Length: 561
Picture 1 (cartoon, rainbow, N blue to C red):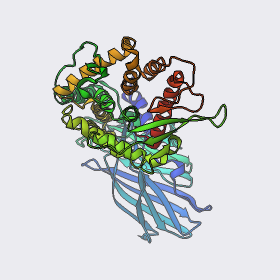
Picture 2: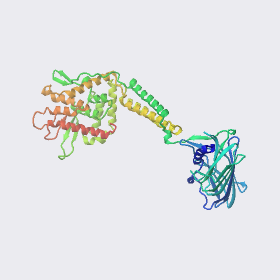
Picture 3: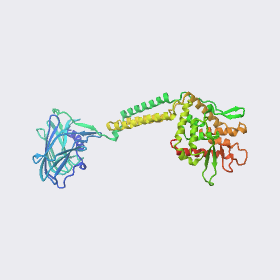
Picture 4: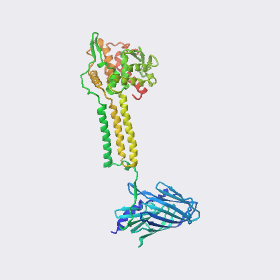
């Protein structure tokens, strides 16, 4: 098989990917512009540049004429071939072209000259980067005829390529592989090309091979074309680097938690904590280490949330700082509501967060209806949470406020996540390693998530948590049945706030209900009163509804809970 036949597929590819401008990008021409003749001469210099001179006989229908020379074209699936264009000039009827414009376009240069009537335009320019290496040796190619918005009846080309060994030529519209009307290689290595009927937007592209004697060096330049697929290439190098980066971020986050986010001591299993203190007046409730319900919830889950606030309010009621009065329904299917009455202001015996809660609930008076609490609580709940977080640090159960620790870790994670977003954009633009930016983003997300469990309890806090776990086991497994009947109501009432914060409200509300030993209506139990014909045996449902309703009020008032 001849060298020319072996190179024909490559020539076809070059034709399809030659530097051409699609019809949609061609300059608009006057409707009656007409090219009557076209000829071109081109010479390859020793330094690998192609000097081109084109002569166009034009009958102008307007006052300007434009054409576009392409400098960037698709080469293969990933790269574009780029050409250098310099020394651009033009004459019209032998005089320097008036109003010559050489404007940059997305993929080339748009040349515009002033013309009128019968005009002879001569374009001159130099093209660089026209010599390329191939599997068969060096090749020279360039679409000499290109970028005209009107048809050309006949194009004649004379190209001087020293040491040319073969030539092929393609003509037609974009994507055409139609051979030229004629193309031949003269004895002096000159190329003679003719093409009849070049359509508007068409081109004539020559491709010629060089012998081994040619001294001109390859100078073709290519630029990697940006695509979304390339920016996020999934191969061994990109995936491997992304895994390494994510692994470093993951290990770093875990190591940071291991050294800074773990409790100072291990929480032991412990035995059930029976919160009973036997005194001269009989068995009394006594919480482990004197811990209060709101503190229990914050120590357990490191968060001051709606359950902790609700349990604190119940505890304050049981301790006689307020009463909860269940209001009668307006109708059989009407909603339940409650009125809270403050009994006294309280003194130093109250912890700061307890005092803050009382002041928040009763900010507008010593009596308030639960259904009206949402708007009034909204601006004041922050202080309750602030005081509760500060309290667990004051008690020595945490070295730093749990919310502040979470915020620091979350902020660091979000900063890393943001850096990953920026890195992803940069890497996607300049390389194929966009996945590495995703890995940094994932590492930031992991850091933020691990930060949610980063607040570390002190050794004292871990010990208290162990005792709380024992109290929970007691509340789950035991009852007040072994206590004297006269003490059961008070004991069950004191247990109720702790049961509420640990998810056992219904069980201990029923313990209270079980102390109702008759069928007569009850006025209440001191801290909780019902409407007419209310029975203590109904308190299980009443308290469950109250906890749900008051908790819902807090959730509406402060969605961050």
